[in-house]
Every structure is written in structure tokens, then in C-alpha cells.
Amino acid sequence: MIKASVVFILNNLGQILLLKRIEGDCWQPGKWGLPGGGVNKGETHEEAVAREIKEETNLSIFAPKVVHVLDEPGYDVKYFITKNFFGTVKIDWEHTDYKWIYPKEINQSECTPNLRNLALKYAS
Image (cartoon, rainbow, N blue to C red):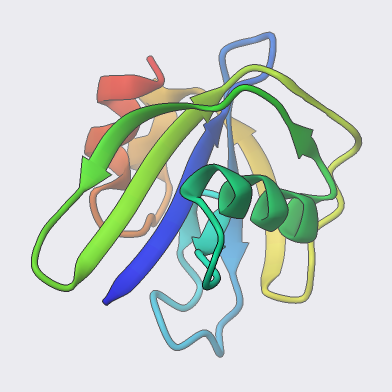
């Protein structure tokens, strides 16, 4: 079972933060995606998303709200959204780049599955 949490982080311009996965990644190498990751044993989705964001971006997030749940066989993935964050983006070793992008411009980026549809639905 894949148990994960990801988040749409929105800045004051309405842009979302995307991270570019490393080329050697085992899932969607080189694609743009949301920050987030796996939920550890004993951790809630909310705890996991806050931890992963801090590890991947150096940002601290607050009051993330669930906007979508992928609840298919083998998956338990929650998508959050928040405008409440502070810090300066500093990406980790799992990513090669980051960018802030307007949801309507997401079609210009090679993204992880379903990101385009979800960004237009929830972050616009």
C-alpha cells in the first residue's frame, strides 16, 4: 500500500510550488510534481506532509486542508492545499529545481500523473 501526502503550496500571487524530480528517481524521473512524500508508520497524513515539506523545500507549512483523496486499491494519497507557509525554498537531493507557476500555465510543464487536472481543479 502506497500511503503518501502531497501539498499545493500557494504564494500570495496564486502560484503553486512545483519541484523537479531527479533523473534517477524510481517514480516519474525528471518530471515536475508537488512537494510531499510517504507517510511513516505512526504518522498522520498531516504530520507527514509537514515533515516532507520541511525536508524537501525548507519551508514550514501551517493549517493544510485536504482537497482530494486518491483512495484506489493499493493507494492512500491525500492532497492538501495551504497558503500558510514561511521560509526560503531550498530544495533537497531528491530534486533538481523548483518553480512557482500559475495553475493555468501548468500545461507548459512535464508533470507527474493527474497533476494538471488537480491543479486546475483545486489551486485555481
